[in-house]
Figure 1 (tube, rainbow, N blue to C red):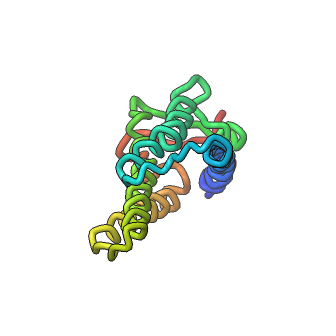
Figure 2 (figure 1 turned 60 degrees about the vertical axis):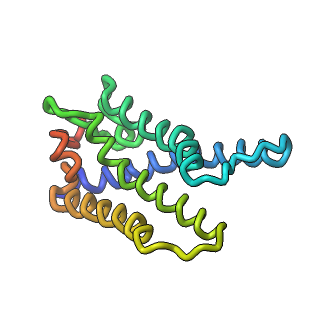
Length: 168
């Protein structure tokens, strides 16, 4: 009944392990640059730091999912391992992944802003809390919709006309 859902969760864990490994590599490289070459990757501006983070982390992760899911195998490594595939039904894989990672990027915006306010020893403005809470609510809606569809479709799958199925 929930076979696709549980496989999707396991596929997420595999893919997330890949993301963590990549993020750890970025951390090690940035630490090496800072400690051995005196390269400071903190630009002091939340916008500049956000742009760097987007190009170094979010964009490569987005491209991993997008290019994998629109490839001939229609799956990321995690989905392939769990024998799942993304069926597009004339849907939009780009939109699917854009919507999937939008809360992640909004959360990054909030984190960089809150770090900036903390470094400046300024009180955190109310609007910033909503920037941190809204992505969590969106992800909760994604999760509930995925559970209700038994793993086949999240809200972002419905909007982009895609579906997760067992590979035949």
